Amino acid sequence: MIVGASIAGCAAAIMYAQQGLRIALLDARSDIRAHKVLCTHHLQPCGAPILQRLGATEKLLALEWWKPFRHSGPLGE
Image (cartoon, one colour):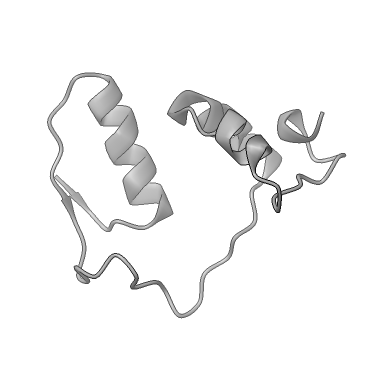
């Protein structure tokens, strides 16, 4: 069971599920449109291996509006 369906909770749930585990992901808000009032949307270079493991790197790079900072690490190479 993972409590908190924000970025870290969802990433953990996906990685556990990829290992074949059954996961219950719980959050205080059930509305998918609910979001944190204060949240950062910055990806640190050290997060690149996690994004690759989640299968998100190619999807992020394919977005027209998302452009990685070219000097920040593996995603920007």
